[in-house]
Length: 620
Ligand SMILES: *[C@@H]1O[C@H](CO)[C@@H](O)[C@H](O)[C@H]1NC(C)=O
Image (cartoon, rainbow, N blue to C red):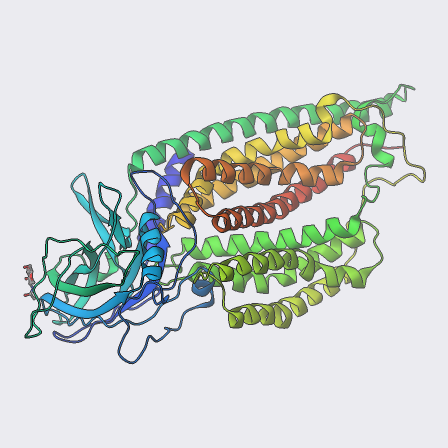
């Protein structure tokens, strides 16, 4: 129960804290409020209950033919993280003035060629959303959940009628909620857009009336002339600026979420606790027995894990790779931890677009130091001698793999003319950060790591390796490792599900309190399970525990990949080849990172466990 209480407190704390970071903009009456446009993204359709594509497109992609500002679209400056996450923000020709209601304004008229019509109609069928920003707030669609109004991000590009005909939305009803401060200034606190498909035509004198009953269908045989119109309504609101994001962060049926989370937390804690208690008790008995035998000096056949004391600290195969992974894992661990703490303290408000990714990159870069240190120290402990190679590989191998896959996937995005493709300049910036900051820091870490003493071992390693007896079936590599991965996965899968939702359904992710608790649980279970497996392995007189511990702890990532596939099958129906390749590619990347991270956590815990137990028995 205590844990639950802590959880609730944590969650309420992080809800209360998510906001500082950006200061409000005050507007005078009749002052222009800019409307910015972001990429078009596929949306979650509540009818078919899936997402049909994952490729974002630029608002000013020539095929959409949207109205441009008279002086041409201008790209707005964005943070690194925001660019990496696919934001491409431009200005727009919409003219909004604080407090000035407009009933019908013409934006521009565009002619769609047959070819453009085919493109747009396909995007309407795939349920693409427009994403606008007014004063940093995304325009949403209002939905009623019980008595509460909330916004879902974006609004549809068009609809498909009952006769399966796609129609384009050409009239936008922009509703802006404002709050008047005591000083008489106005602030934007809510934005929603109701789009309509209306064939509005200007009269001969240039005036225009909106509200035509006729829908706009783009014909694929001929050019179609389309007039875009909009109206603006300013509605006073009692919502203050500080809480204006609440409507976006609305969680459906929070009680179910709480319930499932509490449920999984309790079961995971219970299982882990039980396993740990049993293990501790057995160990204590083992140690007492071993030490007793020594005292009575009976000549008795030793059994169990004591037998392998002369081999247990034998250097593992591929010690270079293992220590490089350990270094990268430690680096990821520190990055994740620091980012979570940052998020919990409320520095990553959702209004600060891409701040999460930016912060992660910054932390990853600076913790390169930790990576180098850990890698070097373990390499030395394993008895390795190619220090230079180790110092070079640590900051290059894992980030290099991730970066290469990322670049490869980026080619697919470029090929699809997607706005999600990361620009060349940003790529260069990433490489520069990597080489100029991360690698030198890592080298410094390596240097310090090599200068320190290697970890000492409580027992000496024999010259000649021991024969390993036949292993029981249950301890074979694949079953044992796969079995070990289940428990840590149970601790984290609900959060992973929400993270997928926020990635693919463009929901705002803000449940860092939950995430924090789940990560703690995952670390605990990973540690317990790895220690348990290592113990069984040593009892079976198998001293090749190092890689096994790493794999067992990393096995959680196999399940995360599986979950992604299940998610793909049941929640997404990605039409195109490219969407599927991208989805699988990003999922593999994510699970690789999880593998290195959890594998390292498990290995390091198992390492100190083995050192501890062999340190507490007497060996003649
Ligand atoms: C704009 O129109 C809405 C709805 O008709 C009304 O509630 C609001 O007071 C108007 N705003 C101004 C500033 O006139």
